[in-house]
Image 1: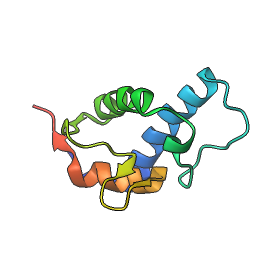
Image 2: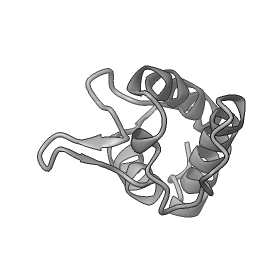
Image 3: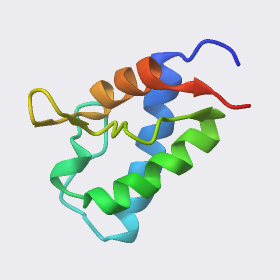
Image 4: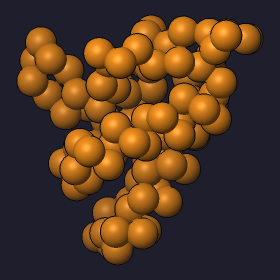
Length: 94
């Protein structure tokens, strides 16, 4: 696996979140790197979405890692922050 690039990871997350946002008919928001998915989409859906994102990037996200939330600060993360967390936590697919 090549090194994950912030822009590539952010684009994959934006695409996946935007698809879900459209399916849920959440019209009042724009999905960009400052969008905070956890404020609009349930965590159960986002957990499923993480699997799709990991597959598209060909990485594994550890089971105990939820990229859209920071346990220490109890903060919902933006897509930019989620991408950084994913890059830090992701593991090569075997």
